[in-house]
Length: 169
Image 1 (cartoon, rainbow, N blue to C red):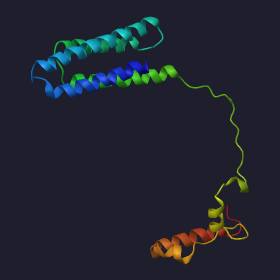
Image 2: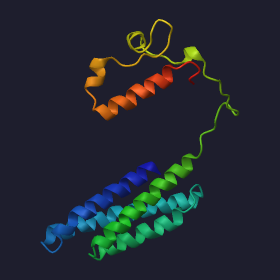
Image 3: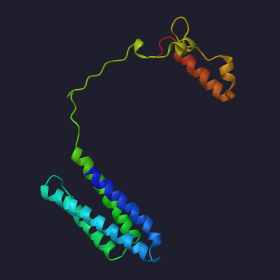
Image 4: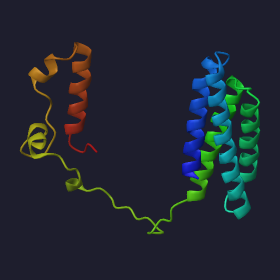
């Protein structure tokens, strides 16, 4: 289904690129006929999937693709047709995701563990800069604080003092 969705996306892009060329001559009409044939082939592939019964909604998507091919064959390429192609593309992508389904969780029941003091992994250089000898957080240096506005400095200093206070979480 992913491959078919990719093809539909390409058909939509081709259709959108042909809109400005419509009415310019026979070259655009020939490309439009090729686009209609490709859309019809895609509709037939979707119809095969419907016949296999593996994909719910394949019949509706096949009907939509067939209607789009008929519009293109008749030379009626407009913004609405391109929007319908894009909508069909999104439906096909969604159907492909549905077919993949939910992946089974190998471990049926998840387990959690409570964090402990050594579960925070900081690089040694950063740990040395942030903690004092007792393992408590240090207030930033004056050089660090000078780069901040006075209001920001007060907030940072207050924050680090509360973190470094005994009994802080």
